[in-house]
Amino acid sequence: MRGAVCRPGEGTATWKFSADGGASAEATPVDQLHATFDALLDNLNRARAGRLLDVTAQLTGAQGRLHGVRAWVTADGGKTWTRTAALGGHGGRYHVMAPPSSLVSGGFLGLRLTAQDSAGGSLDLTLPRAIPVR
Image (cartoon, rainbow, N blue to C red; front, side, top):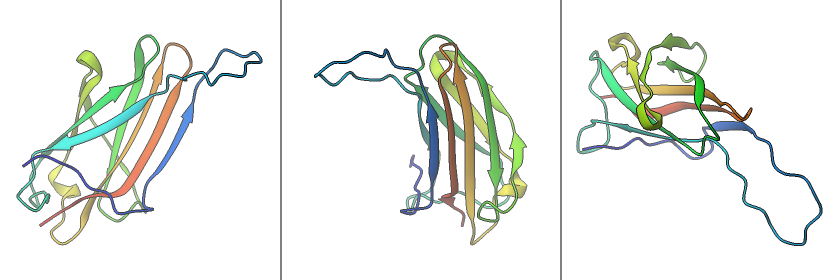
C-alpha cells in the first residue's frame, strides 16, 4: 500500500513567492511550491522498523528550475533532525532516503523538506510525525 499520514495540527509549512503587483478587482492565482509524499507502507499505512525507507517527494508549482532541495528525518517527534539524501529531481520527483535508525518500532518517522525555485520561491515543510512505524 502507498501513502503517508500526518496527524491534524502537527505539520508546518512556510512559503515564499513573488506575485505580480498591481491593483485589480480580480483574484490572481499565485504559483507556489507544493510537496506530496508517497512511500511503500503496509495495509495500515505503517512503515517497517529498522529498514531503509524510500519516501518519494513530488514537488510541483515551481517557477523555473528547482534547486536547494534538502531533506531531514526525525524519530523523536522533531526534537532532533538528521539530514538525509534527497536523490533524483527528474520532473520534480525526489527520493528521500530514511535510514533504518529513523524507523523505530512504535514511533513515527518525521519528514522535513526545503526547496527553492529559480524565481525566488521557496518551501519549508515540516511533518514531525508523518508515518507511523510498526
